[in-house]
Length: 80
Picture 1 (cartoon, rainbow, N blue to C red):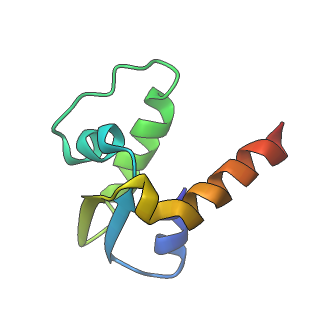
Picture 2: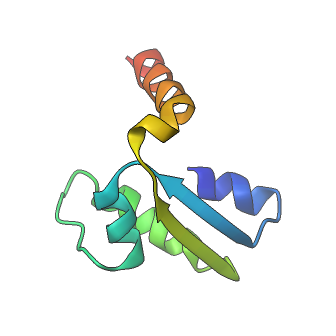
């Protein structure tokens, strides 16, 4: 997770930008995570947030996040 990388670099204030409105709203506590498959990742991310002094969650449009989207897709392809 990117949150791990931030903590490893001792970044305790960060802004997480993501193109999944659902995930951003879940992390803000506006929506519940209902997917049993995703629950372990959600819980891991929530636990990591406790180590930050400040963390902001910002939704951005997928068109504005093409570099990160490409890297994520490449990582998923590599795992298969």
